[in-house]
Image (cartoon, rainbow, N blue to C red):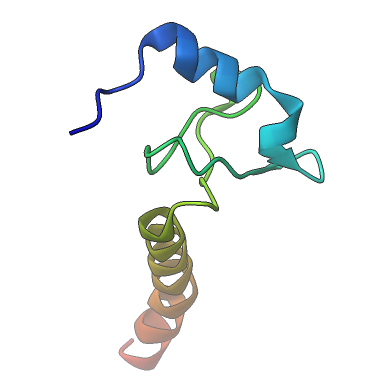
Length: 76
């Protein structure tokens, strides 16, 4: 069983430019977090596109945001 990375390792991954594709897509196969912090942590979280569960969560949230207004419009 793998150990959880320590805080220092997590911060190192977030700062490493190799883990940021095109400057704003976070992609790190070692990082198992669903929503790691953005480059500037005060700005919130981002999706780890190397984690399939993270992508699933992103698509689910996107579908809810797109479908909810349609459902409200249909039933009102």
